[in-house]
Amino acid sequence: KAGVTQTPRYLIKTRGQQVTLSCSPISGHRSVSWYQQTPGQGLQFLFEYFSETQRNKGNFPGRFSGRQFSNSRSEMNVSTLELGDSALYLCASSLGGRSSYEQYFGPGTRLTVT
Amino acid sequence: GQQLNQSPQSMFIQEGEDVSMNCTSSSIFNTWLWYKQDPGEGPVLLIALYKAGELTSNGRLTAQFGITRKDSFLNISASIPSDVGIYFCAGQMQNSGNTPLVFGKGTRLSVIA
Image (cartoon, rainbow over all chains, first blue to last red; front, side, top):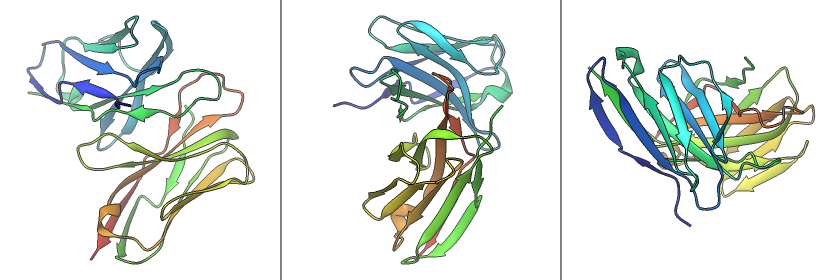
């Protein structure tokens, strides 16, 4: 079974621009979670989508948004990029039901904002 | 929000040595997960634990779900250079429904050949 895939793997953007990252979950997984990882802050939860609905949201500004499609693929968007948005963005998929908390991560998208 | 205290933050060990790290919380958890992350990659799930007192192995790795349900331990036996990386614990709090997993800040393991 193919793992979680994320595209692109690397991205360089300029401050003020916007960016869209994509995540394809493991086949059959209905939940996709997004995390921001920086050296000083560890894994910070952004949001989770389940069956096309945002089920949980972390403590990030409204510039960070996401969505999930009917095939469970998910995208996250960051508008008006700031230098501090430079990070590794990880998505993780899981079955999404009760007692199915095992999350499987993709390789991440490394975003650099200049 | 809820935090997991993971220790130690970093470790330097000789190849062949055994390694122990742990994760503690003030809340009760019903699931503990251990991940390993290599540089530039996403975390990889190593072991999942679902019952208090449960002891689960994956090769040279052994993890335990603490009896109090507030802690978990990961042991690596006979470490090798490819064990280098960051190890994260994560947990699902009891009666928290579908709230997000809580992650520790990681233990960075370095192995000296």
